[in-house]
Length: 392
Image (cartoon, rainbow, N blue to C red):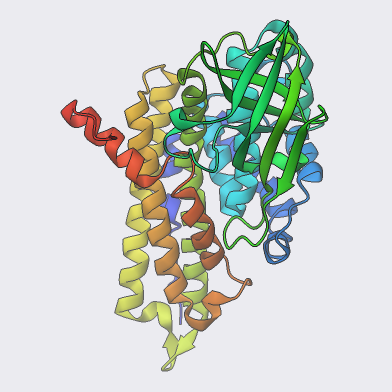
């Protein structure tokens, strides 16, 4: 037996009624791209620990998804909310695919678009928007994660040139990138540089043996006497405000993206619960299963409403960094809880790659700690509420 009618998680909260026709159209376009080009292959990518990043980048570029929220230089210039909805649909496929788009558009492209000069923008942004060039973002180091001020990478002047030395770690897209936005310590503070990855002294080593984000390219960057011309410097960024501004931009996409993973988990769990029979009826008919489905649907709905509210604030130019932290803290934490609960509904089948919840849960363990750990975002919110910094 099955219910005569069912309500989707989105319909439970009437999410579509909160979106414009353009936002609905963009969401449906991205959903089709994911259905046609990601879902049929993602389990295999995850199992093999690989991603056809160049092929995907060109596909996503042709769909207008790379740097879609930026204006000019071949970028689509959509609203922040539309970009968030795209991130949601991409992460419903896999966090690794959303990470490719997020790092490309909200870190590497955003840094060049916001802090670069006209020559840097004109050369790199059209190539990156089309997916012909892939970018990465070199900030995190082996000994400087949550505290980027502790970075050891250096940028020293040598005549009119710059010499970069250091190591960056956990860099998405690193070993397939054509250009890296690298942050290093100079005499006048933290500075950003646009580094073509074919520059002598630049090496990208793929990180293997991952248990999370397996359908994603993760790398270590090594800069050994990388000589750059003066034109490689990002003139508009000085100090940590530059890279932190980029991180805030990327975190916004995660607020939506995490809800895509949660929605996919819940849809998988509902479908399974309706078809799996035990004791003579579908397990969806049992109270404990329905309690799990109801609880996870509530967290998904609340997270979606929060994401849309923050999207509207961003489009109005009123989104504060602490609000971004609150959004990432809540939505990633709750998405991980949804994924774990939905996996339990699938029982033993839940550990198989045929079903998405455990894959999403493993990915979300990384999302929980990258772009600022939950602990850091908790302290950002605490600082906002008390005006007392507790970072040190």
